[in-house]
View 1 (cartoon, rainbow, N blue to C red):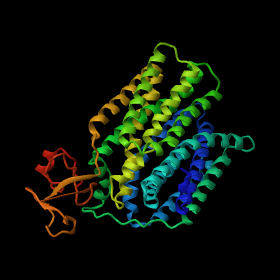
View 2 (cartoon, rainbow, N blue to C red):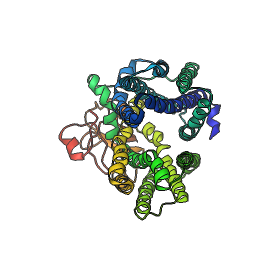
View 3 (cartoon, rainbow, N blue to C red):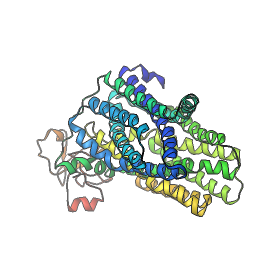
View 4 (tube, rainbow, N blue to C red):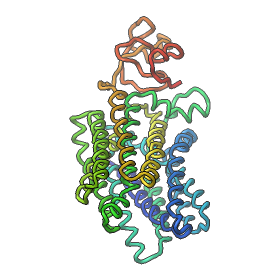
Length: 467
């Protein structure tokens, strides 16, 4: 897996990701302490609102920022967003009102919503070989999991010698170091996608591409299962450990670490597994494991038989299944869009996948508080089960890259039709299929319906048009 670090450009980008993640982890701890200073007992409400602002920024601002940034070089955009995040981190220690926290969090997360999809879309072009890209995705998953373990420990060490305000300084240094590493390498230039229409078309292109692709609709359902399990773990671990099991606060970190260890284990094993299994064969069973794990938790809580060892084992299983879904995600998105459309596709993936948390977090928190942990676990188990079952239906079993299809609107002499043959409705051929300007909806199996037609034909095919 580490062999991809021999590639200089990727090595610098990966280092930038790791350092920025460490800085983000420090900011998470510092923001909690800042909220307590400003709001006291209402700190939870402040953090909950800040988390909602974060998710809304991810859902709404990412695609807009990606559309506006099409004329900016990737390196310039990434550096600008790192500098913006560093400026926010530097300003946070000086706030005196809760509303100021909300404004700065909005700016910080808006910058992240522009940075992350652009960064993700760059990696498959830096590492065009699928095997290398799969290893890079596993390393990225490991980086996220290690950040969850390392950043709190680093924060604790710093807090032993300095005030929490210095954690924001560490965050600032992390973002500036990330910007410097991005500047140090040359990144592939982004070729603007061929696009009809105005700004609205550019802003929504990624969403329409995503929802028009069956495998990505299946992927979106997999992320619902991930959101259900992750929300239960992140929101209710502290309650399960301290209230249900009557253990100390230190065991909360151990339980969350078990979830991270499960995810890291999956990331380490997946590069080899994905050489023998398809993404669908890995991700759909993983969604089923998430549903089953939440159902087991529901039964254990209902029967009052949940124990410490059982919780750790269950959290590791949920972590491994979560990692099995999140790690290959980039492969699916990269394979479903042209290089020019990848930033928009990754922005849609970023927004839509985080949108599920706007459902999962309230279910995990509010339902647990008002109806009990078992009820919250049951509701989230139902969400995960629905996602797994719907994924079986939505994601085609035979998900071939090359698909036969018919063009009716292209001139017969168009270069794209080289090698095509005459069909009842136009010109038929087969190639690796993605939604783009020439292919506006997904061809149906064993069908000669056109892929570039609109109106009645699109409605008959049941596909979603890109234009």
